[in-house]
View 1 (spheres, rainbow, N blue to C red):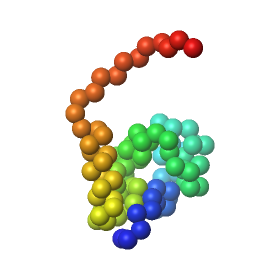
View 2: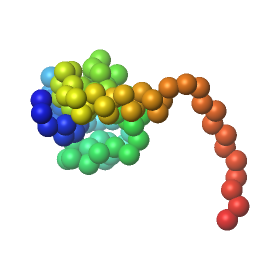
View 3: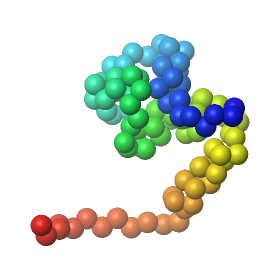
Amino acid sequence: MSDPKLKFNEVLKTLMEKHELTQKQLSSMVGIPESNLSTYLSGSFPQDPLVIYKCARVFSVSYFYILFGEEELTEEQQKIKQQVGELTAGKFELILRPIKE
């Protein structure tokens, strides 16, 4: 694969057909409104990476497969994978506090 273009919507449609899932069923399994899933299937990209992760888990495929449609990654995709790994490595602490406007 020489084009690192994201194919999330195409892969998602194919997986839904293969597993005979409706939009209503998948949106319920992922925990998102059906209208959001419809926009993703039309080509919009989820703002929340957790949605992509949950979709990958439902179909038992890798995060990168659901994004690119292939397991074998190009050099450019390998760099993206490494950068994502670096961003998510280690321990994090999330602190919620009110902010002053």
